[in-house]
Length: 252
Image (tube, rainbow, N blue to C red; front, side, top):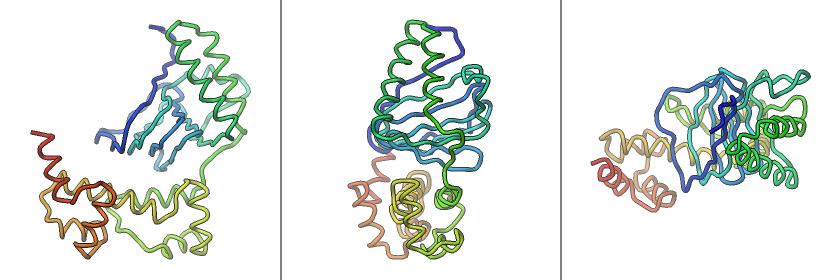
């Protein structure tokens, strides 16, 4: 195994996996995640970054981050020292960038070659590959702040779910304009994101508490227990009680 301050791991998950409830971690390296398929949700510096296929996420060294969830995520994660960036480039804040189709294919193969090069201790190739990858990025890349704010709000279990008009008003956009912005920035509509966040909260309450299903429905903003059960079954293939029982059996 190489002793150079660079590491890369292949990411290969199936289905929806919520990350373990552990404190945010930080590395003395520039951390990265590149997806060739699926999606992950990363939290860093109070922002949420939704990464899908063909997208690269970079985080400056010693900055804490956590991954909220993986969904059929394939790709690579790791870190490299700031010295690999070169004298004329600085990564001072989280960067989230989407490659065009042909560039995404090339970037994926570049990460694959870096993983192989690490196994063979080819440090010079890795350094050149990192700089080549960074040369593909514009000088200043950052996700839309209002999109990040929306994601942060709906994934905050201390906040109730609002109406589309409320989120649009906060962003100083019309509801249609807000929907277009969220879909453009994240690949999903606000309604789709709210459904994901609502399901995440419901699973937590069903798995970690003994709250009755009716109370869980109220806690995730659905006052009709029958509707909540239909919503949950559509998303998971199980009723809320079936899910709770399955989780209890798995932890025996």
